[in-house]
Length: 285
Ligand code: PLP
Image (tube, rainbow, N blue to C red):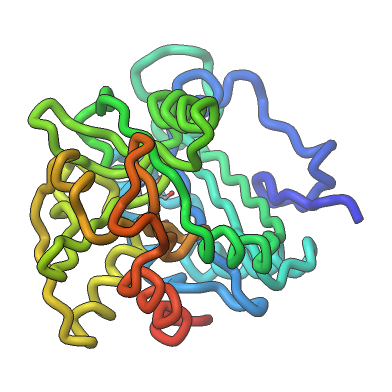
């Protein structure tokens, strides 16, 4: 079955879906995106993803291309046409097509909307979570507004590639103060030796992850000790547990950082429990 993409009002086989070369996403990375998990045919935490999308668009002064209700229908249609039960839906909105000029195009330029959906192998993901993953650290060389979910991801691409080349699954960015900011496509967490769950505050230095927000709610509901504060790479090396969160990976235990075992080198109890709880806590629509 050929995959189907939505592009500006049309559903097309992926191979036939196309964007004009002067699209500002292609020319300048001038756009934003969202990735939402699909589980059992349902969108997970859709309302929060759509709220973050609206914020990203507004921060970049890109108009919302269609009413939220219409966008919700497009997402569902795309999921349905691609027959996805467990996977992800990807939504990208750029500032549209205009003659190349760095400054904004004329008012009224229509944003470009693309939606794709694809299945994921949930059993394989569970196996990965059961084993835990390795992470490397890299200097955080990104711009100062990574709280906007922009499609401008070159440092993230290079970081992820560095991880791959070193046999790791994710790279954690470390800022000039030695603090871990976040992963190339995930938020970063540790559990201290005294059992406190720690993640960096969601300022402009990280993306305010939707999974991160849900996991904080679970931690509070379970009465676990929680600190929203920066943590250093050295503190992560000495942590009892480490894990990452994202819509596509949920809660994923980290068992090695820069080739040093974390805790006893196996997925931690808290990370594993949070992964299990996530399913019950996330909102399906
Ligand atoms: N941080 C970055 C840089 C990301 O790209 C992502 C997800 O793609 C996240 C964090 C996690 O966000 P969410 O939980 O909303 O998927």
